[in-house]
Length: 429
Image (tube, rainbow, N blue to C red; front, side):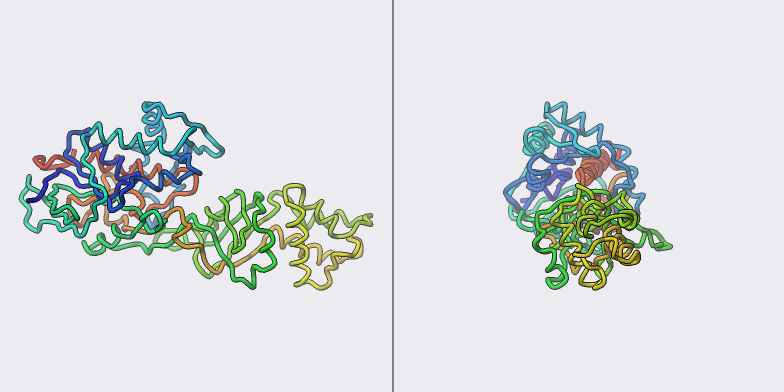
């Protein structure tokens, strides 16, 4: 015999649990399914274990999508302030870091327990671990009867509506899969191609050899890349971030690179300014006048104290290989202006092409997903399969680093929860 519910939510992560709790508290019979024994593992490991659960400064401009306007309605209907009110209702202590980022004072587990409490308040049933094998819409469903059959490890389930909240391919070690995207394709939807986002960038061993000893060095940089802006005209645009950069043994990481990775496409360069706000070429030519000091000394002064001296010297050695006339042991007064200009410009605009990324294993999110042209921006319901909804990371909406992706999870989940109806109702509220 099958079990019958108003709503089956597949995925017990941030979006799935939040949607289930909100729908349950509206009086719907809700079942949450997840193939993993643990809930919301991505929440638990986020923000260094403190969970950057939202950002005060959320706008649609902080998200990437083939349709950049799609997220606008959901974000406006359930805001960071709305989620913060729920956090405070549950007496979770929090603090704000730079750029509007909000974190738990104690532990990310506080957010997980809050979501479970909201589900309990809504009488939500949760089966874990319980794998889903198939979701089949009824071809001739009669209004008021179940519209879907869901095949699971625990038997057949009938549901009036199904919500897909299964996330993406990042991070596989905590159970991430592309089940939701594959299901969407089987049910007639198209996908914006999936790719790792908010992910460290890597370089070929030969091009990176000079910088391997710099692993662990961090500094603020301006990072940018050129890419096609979404839309019919496909104009090329440049995106910048002013954030901290981290050198690794295989390439670059840190907030600056994680941010720009969401816009980067293979084969294209990124540009780094390791001394933002300083015109290094002008500083070097000015220092040349009347100076008896070596280039290496004046170079360190031009870069300033924010750039570690070990990196400054490595950079100088690296550039000298390409510019033999740039003798680092010479007095700066002996060098040509054109060589000083070349040196300064090389650090103010370091053009470098990554060979790849660290992949889904290190990516914080998955970019791409269910094409938003096939979903309602007000309810997240499929335009192709009535009663089927997609929320959170499974959709082609990807936020910046800094709490934006969690806010999309909350906002899209609430938009969906408010649209779900009991099996006896003929239309969404």
